[in-house]
Image 1 (cartoon, rainbow, N blue to C red):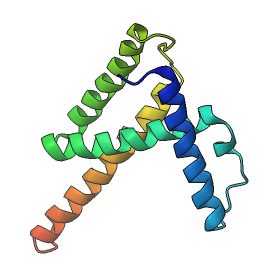
Image 2 (cartoon, rainbow, N blue to C red):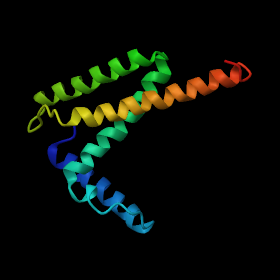
Image 3 (cartoon, rainbow, N blue to C red):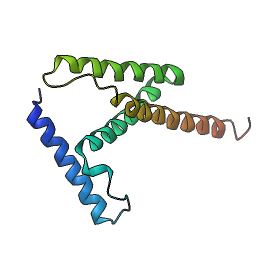
Image 4 (cartoon, rainbow, N blue to C red):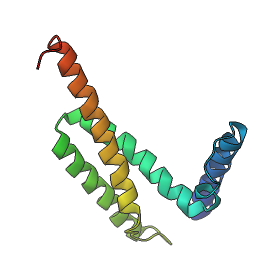
Length: 124
């Protein structure tokens, strides 16, 4: 299991890499979100749960059920933190998680809808 120091170091390495990419390609971001490691971790939640939403929706193809299952995973993830030293249930992670998995499910819905439309010869 990853200890706290390793966890913080990994987050800092990822944040440093993101800053390097943003600076290399001169991406305009007003320099706000990555300066705070806590903000960087919140954005990471959104990215992680986006891929969860895509994967779950791809696997079961029921969009509403996919959202509910992802929500249960998100809440379960927070509840498990109670048993990890110095971690805690963080309500502020849940909206970032939800933004990610809802976006992932929506993207999958669009892909499936386009596939059905094209598969029907373009007829409704």
